[in-house]
Length: 255
Image 1: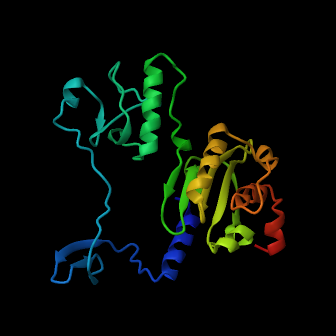
Image 2: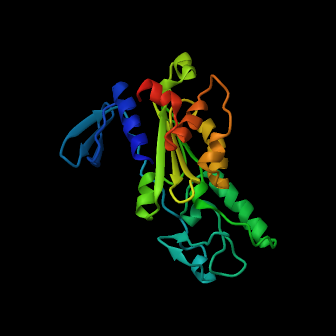
Image 3: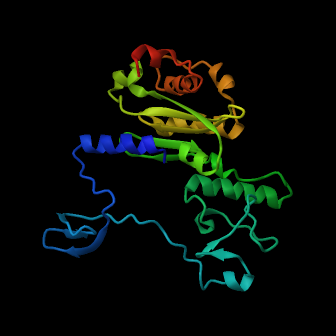
């Protein structure tokens, strides 16, 4: 996730009196009469009614014939290319077993690509840099495309801009003013390659953002669109304008 998205989420959780123990993972858990007692890496102990373990998933792919087929496995995951082809001709793989993005909508898209490619549509391919995600926290989080950190890791020159929801009338009307929309664009051609949102209706807003990133819409092209008022979607347009140094309302508010 975008670094600033993490920062806003942490702030929102603390406002709700959620205690965070970042960088101090639990090393032991025992049942007690009242619930569970956790021992953290630092030695600190926490007693609570319930503990939810969310440590990710591991593939269950061994012992079911994959090796006999000669499939290329890495840490139990079936390796595929952008067409969802494995290293064995005629065999495709999709979904969590590929170890890509463990999301239902991504698996569904992979399935469509695999079928289309298998039926001869050679251009059918998965763009892993254009997969939207939504996290249903409060405030909501949604993201599609590259973050600034990923651009730096790939040595991609980029431009970025953002716009806070608290500058919008709609956000004040619904009482949800935390968060922002951030836009990342390639410095070379100003194509939008990442949009990151934390705030009201983020999971809905990301649908339009997915189109923008997938089609490689430029900042100038996006700036020529009109967003309805009053809506939270105005933050997307304003963030684009902020990348260009032309966000009128952000300047007016001194944000």
